[in-house]
Image (cartoon, rainbow over all chains, first blue to last red; front, side, top):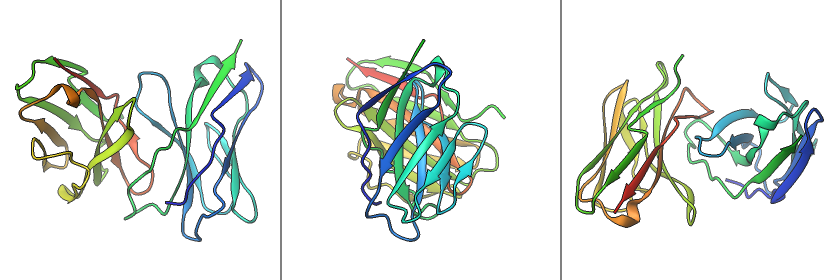
Length: 111
Length: 111
């Protein structure tokens, strides 16, 4: 997996958009960008993944730069329940199953 | 769908005892993973099954650990004999292809 770099922590006001950055400058052409999060005392939760194009689902949007060296996870209207550690992972998926969870970004949503 | 089911949710045992953790993956998922999470080492992959066959057990710490998947709907992780350093949260995850879905985990305490 390509190395990813994320800020250690971020704060966001409830109801505002949370934008979580991730750098993956050595990502290879067949590696997807995955985002997972882990709420305290729970198992990691899959959020979204993408290869080149921007992606959106019911949880979040993923914006990948054209050179694919960085990406941003956007939670459009953060709630207190979105407080969690967010992990950005570069992985080619499928048979390359080993997800490498780094330290992630602790997002704290404040009332 | 109920998601990945793990049992027990909490286990406290004495050193030297056998411990068996159980996992029911999401129906239709053909891959199953066992992870261990500690504060010191983070989230580590222990073993990966594909279509009930163990593919990679290189993360299993030592011979005291064993895992089985007798059918598509059930897997076990056994530790015999258990040691205090095995204390951790053990997660099971299943995957249909790319993304992994984690269970709530089993918190194991070995005294």
